[in-house]
Length: 177
Image 1 (cartoon, one colour):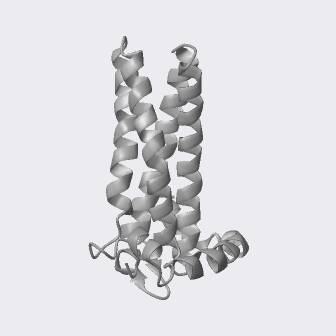
Image 2: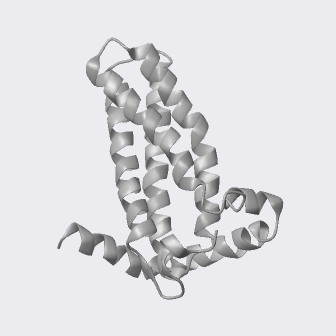
């Protein structure tokens, strides 16, 4: 199975539909025709804002892992991990807002994307908490694992934005913003 086939297979994860429908039944009406919903969807700039916000989070975490690899920069690494953790809620909120506009197949992929990224967030939180006492191998491994999870999430997000064929709207890149 190729990577593309594996990513395409996420669209068939129908076991997520019950949870997806329950979340969307609350989220979509809360965002529809509200100022908050409009802001989270990026209507003020004409396209989703989620991809831009994710850059801050993932960029911070990539920098932290790079600093860990270089060594002797534990304070700087802890600082950029905290920037990533502080920026994550905005990226998460805008991601769920975008998700609420998608069709069933796209929401399946989006839920797996969110789960992978949530794993990354919690691993980086663990790394940050560990660094409050000391920066050791465990803190660095947690950060590296967090970056790996967020990278898989990003790969799935790329498929969602550019490779998913939804039954209702064509590609997700064309969903309403």
